Length: 100
Image (cartoon, rainbow, N blue to C red; front, side, top):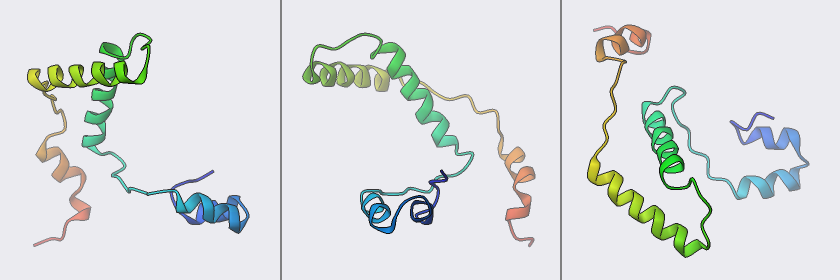
């Protein structure tokens, strides 16, 4: 099922069911190749490997562990090494910009 548009729900479900699903959604359109998304995936991967690699006894413990991990992660300020330069972007995206 294509979930990229609201109309897709009306194609897949009866109108009443589609409407109930759509009312619970908040759709955020993001770039297909968004660099910020890569950063988010890197951070979630680090969180999973460094903090969530074991069972937590309860929700409060989980919250405390994640908060401690976040403080440490922010203090260390990991950076991202970009390989896609501004010149690369200008060449690849030149058709999207008006000619002056």
